[in-house]
Image 1 (cartoon, rainbow, N blue to C red):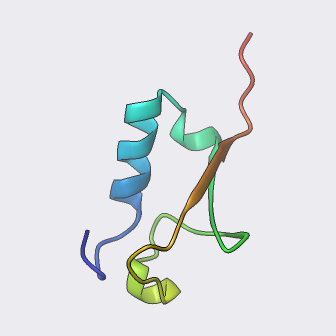
Image 2 (image 1 turned 30 degrees about the horizontal axis):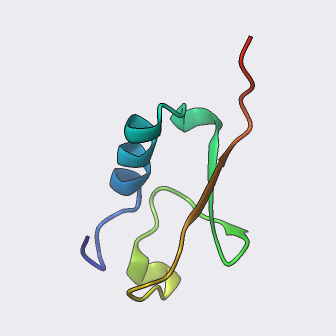
Length: 60
């Protein structure tokens, strides 16, 4: 993905691949929550950086 591509595309792909609900999934870099409008460049990310994802939605 490009340095100036909004992370939303990656986040949506992740949710589609895992079955997670986008609205209930939080994404973090270095422990800080990130907005889907941010780009890797905005966050100073480089190859190999990891984005953590976790869902607060519980089934029922």
